[in-house]
Amino acid sequence: MDTTTVQAKRPPRPQRRPPSRPSSRRRTLRTNITAYGFLCAALFCFALFAWWPIVRQVVLSFQENNLVDEPKWVGLDNFRTVVEDPAFGQAWKNTITFTFLALLCGYVIPFAVAIVLNELRHARGYLRFVVYLPVMLPPIVSVLLFRWFYDPGPGLFNQMLDFVGLPGLSWLDSTDTALISLVIVSTWMNMGSGVLIYLAALQNIPGDLYEAAELDGAGIFKRIWNVTIPQTRLILLLMLMLQIVATMQVFIEPYMLTGGGPENATVTVAFLMYQYAFVYGGNYGAGSALGVMLMIVLLAVAAVQLRLTRDEKR
Picture 1 (spheres, rainbow, N blue to C red):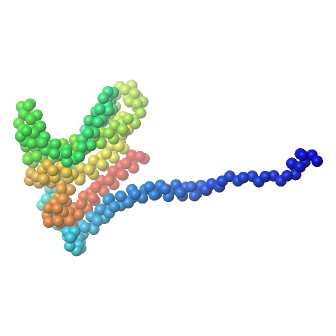
Picture 2 (cartoon, rainbow, N blue to C red; picture 1 turned 60 degrees about the vertical axis):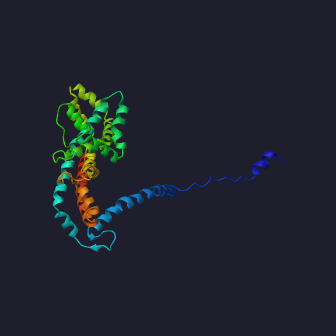
Picture 3 (cartoon, rainbow, N blue to C red; picture 1 turned 135 degrees about the vertical axis):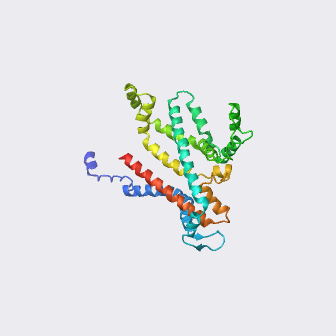
């Protein structure tokens, strides 16, 4: 019998099936569960350290609460107490003035410094480090450093004025110079972050736009006005909102340098909140009421910024 005939009559061997793979829906579900698992820690931290204090503050604003005795609901009495305080209007006036002066210095100067650093070709990394160095220092260290700078006797600033033949100033003891002195400290402490953000935005601007502007005969200021600012408009709007939110919550500078003086010239809303809670007999309800007012103002600023940003994207 022919071997080929025998081999032809043998049944075919069963083929091995490839190992089953999970369906695409199962893989997607597994990926999402893993992603949400990593997000749980961040959501928990936000809920515990950001959202819960906001809710707690709103509740405290309607209570008479010293965090020891049983709280008592008082309705809007805390808000009336805050509004009737003579320091209330002065605190808002100082806060708005500080915000305006800080925008003139802390918003314009970092943008100008970023433009200069973007044009440099040498020592750029070193200069970035020098500009960002104050941000890496603890705020208390920077404030204590400037306290020595402002010393009316051996302070650095008065020594510089004496060197050029000008009389010294009572930087922190005069109602005319106390607030602007705090603005200088705040600008020096926080300028580095803004410079790096602006510098990153400037480096994303196509060079062809500047070359076209140069061919049209535009000088450096026209190039900044017609190319740089329009190309970084969204970043400028975002930084404007962040600057307003940060400066309206100023606390460390008046607390460490002036204590709200002289003559309440540097009392801010955040500093007045601290006084209600920890100086005026633990009136946490009034301090929380003032915090709720500040939060409403900042939410309004954020809403305006979001509206402007949405219009720019369109």
